[in-house]
Length: 170
Figure 1 (spheres, one colour):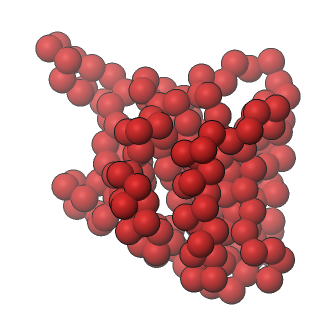
Figure 2 (figure 1 turned 135 degrees about the vertical axis):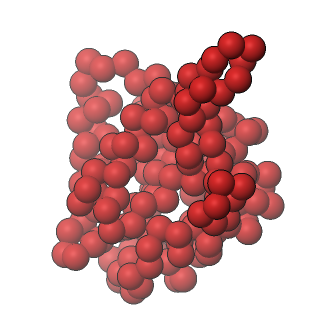
């Protein structure tokens, strides 16, 4: 195993807010059950392991594939304030306005993390984004690859419409 668990908060010039660090701690607590160095779990399996601890924190967590078990976050509104377009997220923390996304094999290979980033950018009430990716996948270093891209993003002239992003490697 490469490490016990790892996370990085962006922008790196700021300390992770307490609530965001608490979310990282949930993944760290379960590292021995979800470690990508030891297991080949899909994202739903990883989410199932951390589900109860996140729920106890008051975080809404996807619990299945039916419409009722998913968590929609509206991005566009119709007349009378009805949600016209929504994106489904793995978790939503109403306390800190944080989106949580857990990715596995396609997290980096298929750039799923970029889709998560885009969706967080356009969800109007999102303040933070947590993206959990494998530390390693098929010989690749997924956490390191995403970290490099986030370093590039935060070092660019783009304005990030979030207060912060937490990247977790499991």
